[in-house]
Length: 452
Ligand SMILES: Cc1ncc(COP(=O)(O)O)c(C=O)c1O
Image: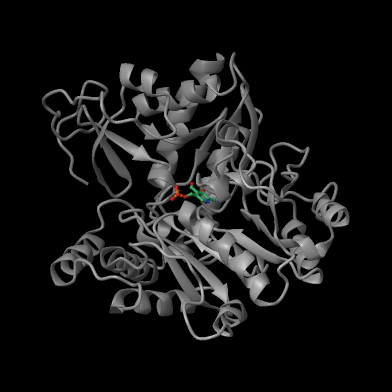
């Protein structure tokens, strides 16, 4: 990392940015635009575990950007691969023709994926991956002669991106209520959030909320349901781990009733849980469709992908000759995105980052759980290199979380805030000294906020 003189906050800094950025025209996503623009937080550079703010100070990235920069920032290997790809082949369509990138990447992913997942469709984001997966599920049921299976089941607190299919199966009210009426024929499972607080790793099950799926099947009939989509660990809504046995039970029920199980691994993929490449591998639960994005390219070029079991693909290939799946994006398998993904997968493999995540995870979880039962801390949850510290509310919902997030940013650590939960998902290259800095910073932030 580049270091230079200490700034007035005592942190190392490069040089100050000059000039004033005009903040008026960019309508910022998922942001309180007016308050942000009154007190902006601007990132001007990034390297390794660190961002640089507009004052030239370093800010430790405890969120891997937005759960995506798993190999750390500024990876030259990826930049070089993208640069070379752009000079060699900047664009080629993948409709009715092809180029080597997506074929190579799909083969590579098939080797990394849980056994049996060997057909891959490319999109440009997690949201598009979700839409693609839902369409594959509906199309597959039709191809199998089960066209009555048109219903979808999601989960309360589930986040599946922001497109219409994704918000319909998603379970976060604020993401849905402005955009009614959404897709018809969708049911939601309960979030399966246990009553016990401060439980590290997957909580023991106190009830069996997965049996709610049997109830939904009992209402509509299994032959009307195409797929269940869930995040193996609820991420964006605040890091909630399912009780032990929950995902296995969902798998049993879906299999028994011929319902496809889609795992949205956009956050949990690429080493995040510290148990192999995907949560499904670590947990030993085999879905039928896996959605990935984010860490696929280390977040540096937009890309999403959907991997399916071969029999799902085979069902489409049994159609009469012609286009089998009327779906695709101009940038499906974009050359620069493929180059970024291949270089990223090389880094994960060469540096053994998934194993590394597993090794350092206990230290990271020790740090998170050192906040358990402190004044103002309502809950701590986490496993691997993902975790959440839920704060006691202060006024409006989300106010306590935002206050802590802003103060931590000022003191040199970026977490993610969702409601009153601070979410953590650092790059897998995190070292003990970084973990200690996160601990120190939040001790300072929370002790001031809650008067320890
Ligand atoms: C589980 C999950 N699915 C889908 C998405 C949407 O991904 P994107 O923002 O790339 O569209 C996200 C993003 O955070 C996610 O966490």
